[in-house]
Amino acid sequence: MRILFAHNRYRMQGGEDLAAQVEMELLRSFGHATELLEVDNKEIAGVGGTMKAALGTVYSRASKKRLEERIAAFQPDVVHVFNFFPLLSPSIHHACWEAGVPVIQKISNFRLICPGALLMREERVCEECLGKFFPWPGIRHACYRESRAGSAVVAAMIATHRLLGTWEKAVDGYIARTRFSRAKLVEGGLPAEKISIIPSFAPDPGPLQSSSGRFALFAGRLSPEKGISTMLDAWERLNGAGIRLKIAGEGPLKEEVQCRANGNGGNVEYLGALPRGQVQSLLGEAAFLVFPSTCYENFPLSIVEAFASGVPVVASGLGAMAEIIEHGRTGLLFSAGDVEDLTAKIEWAASHPAEMTKMRGEARAAYLSQYTPERNYELLISLYQRAIRARQTANA
Image 1 (tube, rainbow, N blue to C red):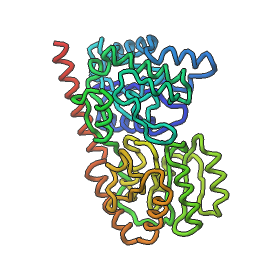
Image 2: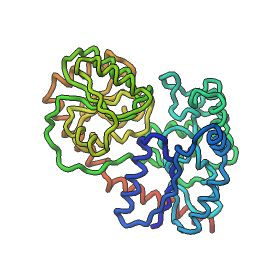
Image 3: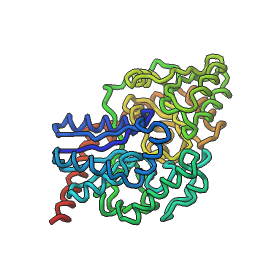
Image 4: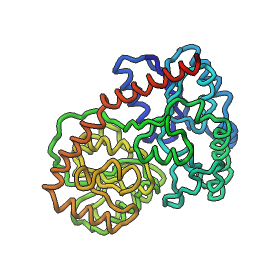
């Protein structure tokens, strides 16, 4: 099969960028021919670059032409879109539709139904725009980068392509990572019959190893919606008791994390941004992964990687996390944003080593049954094949 991927990279590498990379590697390993059309948000520089990006967010003729040329040269059986926002724009879906090539759109956030993409405002869940044809509350609340002008552009993109029928006629299949995400997308107006659930996956690091680490690990973007403040507050309450915390990553809260780590008496260690391999090595040594996000999330890759290494996860019981993690079996769930509850869960984990050891085996078992590359490949190829048959029927 010939698969053309399209992806708009973020300025700072995130889970979507990494997921795009590993999915392409997976398909190549099974012998499929792949190509990538990629743009990078680092191209947006200065006032001129920002204005150009804003004008093209709703419909970029330049991106459409680029994809048309790539389709003509590569002749793909299917086009798999990871992220199109903001530089590629939904014009690329129209390029595929006009060329008669089926399109699979991966859903990694809620951008198609929420100007802020996270169904979140002021560090709390917000669903005011859910189901609205024109998501005007997102403009009023300046949900995109705290800018009403920017939010208006994103809202216009959402509404324009609802009006054009892009999400119904120009996309042959959507990939949601969880049942929770799928339900929210349907509630937001996407066609239910086109949304398939394909969980995230991670390479198998090998047989379960016994953990020697007396520390918890956070690995990810240091931003407010990730629950960073809740996590740091909990470790301050522990005051050196229980278990240490290691933090790997970078983001807008980097300076705050550094400052609070330095003032925590060695109970919290900030490691900075680390190569992926080093993070995975740390994960294998950790007692558990902590994932305190205050937004719904979709399917965090770090949770899958933790399960692959047989590492339980202590996470907020919100959205996708509550679906992925079975409380008391593969990890522990706490009330999102509740410092006292998170502190209690950390203390329980530190004082129940036998139970945590049992969870390690259960986490590994969950990975082997649901989140391996082989399982993902089966589901993905099946979706591609259905999309190709549907497009062939429509074009006949």
